[in-house]
Structure formats: C-alpha cells, structure tokens
Amino acid sequence: MLNFDVVIIGSGLAGLSTALKLADKKKIAIISKRQLIDSSSHWAQGGIASTSSSEDSVDKHVSDTLAAGADLCDEQVVRFVSEHSPAAIQWLQNIGVDFTKQATNNLLHFTQEGGHTVRRIAHVADTTGKAVQSVLIQKVLAHPNIRIFEDHIVVDLITNKKIDLSETAKNECLGMYVLENFSGKVNTIRSGVTILASGGASKVYLYTTNPDVSTGDGMAMAWRAGCRLANMEFIQFHPTCLFHPKEKSFLISEALRGEGAVLKLPNNKPFMHLYDARGDLAPRDIVARAIDYEMKKRGIECVYLDITHRTKSFIMDHFPTIYERCLKLNIDISKEQIPVVPAAHYSCGGVITKLNGETDIKNLYAIGEVAYTGLHGANRLASNSLLECLVFAEQAAQNILAQPGHCKSDLPQWDESRVTDADEEVLITHTWNELRRFMWNYVGIVRTNKRLSRAMHRINMLRDEVQEFYQNFRISNNLIELRNLLQVAQLIVESAIERKESRGLHYSRDFPNKSAEKKITVLTPDNFNGERFKKNKKLTLVR
Image 1 (tube, rainbow, N blue to C red):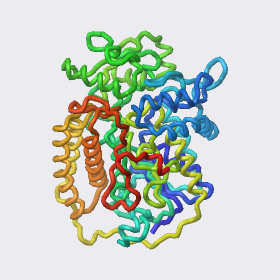
Image 2 (image 1 turned 120 degrees about the vertical axis):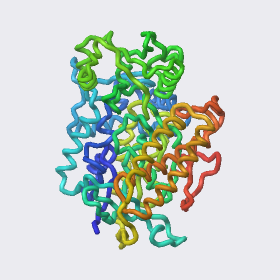
Image 3 (image 1 turned 30 degrees about the vertical axis):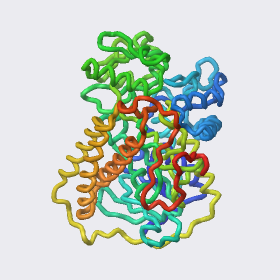
C-alpha cells in the first residue's frame, strides 16, 4: 500500500503549482490520467488576468468580473483573487516563465479579451498555457519529494464513512483506489491530504475545446463521497472553436477579438453589434448565443472570424501558433477569414470550497476548474481561470502546511473476487457517444424544459446500465470516465431544471428573463453530513 502526505489528482496548473508549493516539506504524489502535458491548462492560449498594469486596478477587475458573472459572483472572493493576481504572476516569473514583454521598456505586455474594459492579460505569445506548464513540469520532475504516476486514473475516493459506517464520525478522506491503465491493476493509496485538481467536464458534450481527459472525475468522486456541488448548470461555450474536418477541438483565442478581429456571416456582414453594445468584445455567453442563433436561423455550419485588417507580421508576432495551425489546413488567416463554431469550454460550477480550498470533507481539497469558489458566478470572465488556479493553490498550500500531520489508517484493498472480464465493450463506446450527443442537443447553449426532461430520462436509463456493468466486470479507464460523465451529466441537468430563469450561461426558452432573486444552485448528496443551505442562505456565511 502506497503512502503519501499529499496526493494531487490532476496535472494541470492547479495541481502542479500546488505540488511545488508543498514539496519542500511534504511527500507528494501526482496522479495523471495520461501524460503530464495532457491537461486543459496546456492548451490555454490567451493568458492570465492580472491587475499588474498601470492602467488597471483591483476595482476595475472586480467590476468586469462581476459584470461577466451576471450578479452571481461572490464579491468577497472576486476581490480576494484580484488582489492576489500580481503575486501570482510574480511567482510564475520567479520560477522561470518568460512572459511576453513590451519592446520599448521590457515591461509585461498585456492584451485584452472579451468582457475586459482594459488590457490586463499577461501572456506568452498565444501559447501561455503550454509555456507555463512546460516550466512547471520541469520543476516537478526534478523535485525529489514528488512522485509522478502517469497513465493512472483514480477509481474513487476512500472515506471513513465508506469503510466504517459510523454515524458519529466526521466524514474524512483517507485515500483512493487508483487503476494502472497499462496493467489493469488497482492500487490502494493512503493520503494525509487529497487534492482534487482534475479539471472540468466539457467532454460530456459532443463538441468541446477540451482535451479527452476533461471527464468530470473530481466532481463525480466528490459527490459520491458526500460533497455538495454548486452552479453545475453554468457551462461556458467558447464562441470560437476552429471548424474544420481535420480539427476537433482547436481553440481560436479570444485575444484575436481583443486585437480587433470581427465575427462575420458567410455574406461578409458583421453581426455582433446586433446583440450587444460591446460588439465582438461582449462576454462569451452573449457571443456564443449570438453565433448559435445565427447558425440555426440561417442554416449555416459556421460563422467566420476576420483579422485580415491586421498585417501579416502583427498576426505572426501575436498569434504564431494559431497562424501556423491554420496554415497547415490551407487557411492563411492574414488573407482569409477563420471558420469557427461554439464548443463546450469551461465548467463554472463545481465542488463547493472555502477560500483555502477545503471541501465539505475533512482532508479533501479542490482547486481549479473542479471547484466552485464563487469567483465566476453565472459566467467566467476570460483569463480568470488560470489566475484562479494560482491564487487558490497558494491558499491551499498555506493551509495544508499549517496543519499537523494526519494519522494514516489501514485501508481495505480493492476487491475483484466477484467480477469477470467484460464480454462486450461496445456498451461503453455506444453509451459514451449517445450521452455526448443528447447533452449537446438537449442541454447545450439554449435549453427548454422538454429537452432537459428528455436528457434526464436518458441519463437515468444509461446510469443503471453502466452501474450494472461497473459492478459485474473488471474496470477500465473508459468505464471509469463514462461512469463519472453520467454522474456529472445528471448534476448538470438537475441544476438546469432547478433554475427557473435565464442568466449568464444558462438560457431557457421557457424562462427567458432574469429573476430578481440572485440564487446559487446548491446540490446536496444523500450522504452529506454537514450544514445544509437554506433557500436564501448566502454561500459567504460558511467561508
């Protein structure tokens, strides 16, 4: 049985930065489903929001974030994150991240994205995520106190409530079961502290900008363990994913629109000014809905993003990766418009945490996209996601280092004595495809009561089938991910049904107006043993 002070599930920015902040004093394990580079953080293009610019201020950043969040952000958390943004950027610079500088004075170059009123996005050309992750990966691989488990997937968390059915004991995370993808063996790992940094759940949709690992594992595991989740209905659809038969998830950064790119119809006419006074710099929910409406109204497959008014040298200097990727597909973006469509991009809801990353379960933390901190509200402001990872990684690390060491309990081994090899894996493939397609059609950018009801009916049927499969056959990576995706899909639909209004990323034809009541959707599992929320109770009261 393996034993660690801290086990971090996930290898994105949240997980790796937390590991580095703890590793000098703790024995760390990092569990990665694929390779360390396989995370959404690696593919982040735009950058990291920061109030480091002389033109910016915390108040401006807070105001922009609250506006994007459609009045559902926790202002205390927004201000906290914004105030800590310069320190987050400085930490990355200290460990070797070489942000793009201004040519004239060697100070940080800031770009602008939709929803931001000033330039505040620190970036490394148009490959910020890749640049940051490359530095972090080098650091964690070189640290003697960090052990990496690549090609491993966590099956489930182990809590004292699961192995000791005591009604009086406080729910506590003790470790986890982990499947070796290459051998099929399930290991038991004991952990003093477990950190969920497993990212979001956008692979529940047919079209997504996310890598294949974004299957909602942390959210599903936390729910089964007894954690509450919040605002799961708010799924951000990025407006501009490259539309091409040879590309399934290449993101066209919002920074292009920040530098003047214009969305156009096939007839070359701009249209965003018809939907919002901010035009092409409107927040993502507004832009995605506008594109979705125009595509359905006109029966077109995509719209186009036009940055041809910029010089070729400017485009190659600011967006080298996008330029080269499109050029390989015979699209010269300095001369031609880029075909784009919306795609599922980011989960604004997640596991409820405090400001220090703690969840409802003792010794279980959640950081990054898997968590609900109150920062994003009903919609995420562009480039606040990587910032959130860094700020809460620091807070969680400080909290963990301040705690005494935890006693390690003996844990039961994984039991495969009553299962057999699966007879037909086609069930997994078929169910995966069916789930992603009806989630896109029924629980996508625009929703109705009838669509949500149909989706829930199908989810319930599929969950029963997959659960029977899970109980009777040896598990696999695909089965674990499918089980988790079905659980997260159920939570998304349940939250969407609960919200009787249209706000931010949740748009319902049956409830097209915003309600006067500013309500957070909180889902509570049956095995939750903490304080429940009353209908109008504010989340800030328990921080």
